[in-house]
Length: 367
Image (tube, rainbow, N blue to C red; front, side):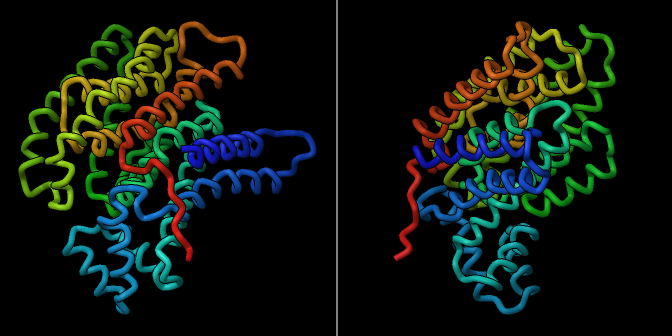
């Protein structure tokens, strides 16, 4: 556990130093410090043992080894497609395998690309949340998740990067982002829902109607998912590789009710006096996975709800920076409360329940 926490805090400090205009600090120095902040967790991802993350041995190591054994790019991509491995994930495997036969480089580079995308996403939306708070939120909520869901994690961060197009309601650009995300993981098509939600919620000017609409959209979506979920679990639409998740009661218990940890954040929003488009959107985004955790117990719940929770990288810092009814006088105190909540979440989800089997962290044996 210490390897994660220490890395997160050092990375967070570096991100803070690199994104603030401190005296005697040139732009080049700031870029270098930010790069170090991004690099540290990427190194941690690359140096991990194969036992860290359940999916590493499912389609991590195997598909990189397949890429090494294929000399022809088209043959490999065709083989990946037949086995439901999406195009961009296959392409990335193939490219890295041309330079090295060590799969740890693949995990390092995959994490590095994801971390760069997240950092750029936070930079593009720095007008609503601070980059350093958003970065810490990503590390504590999602970094361990990315060590497990190798293909989907790339799709998630691409959709996070597209949040700026959601805010600006640039449909064509967002559809292009969505297409790229689905080339990493086909389930990313669900990313169209947040765009539609933002569009609907920001067009309602009446506050009472808007509040009822937030609740209505959440209930309707969760009710529909509850009805369709069991069908997905027993149909051919869910790949056979996920049968371990569909049939594991232990996994269901881990990924079910505990996500009520979202509830306090949702309450903060509901008592908020802030009336902005982002606030309305974030309320809805947090409401849906909260309702899912209350009413639905499906083993693959967290993997699908992640297409909503990924926006917590903006939402959680937002509530501590803008959205609480009682505004703390000190920004440092706001950040302290956010960090304590992130520690609580990480400690329960990853430390105690060991979601994704990424704890304890084990370095791979180089000998």
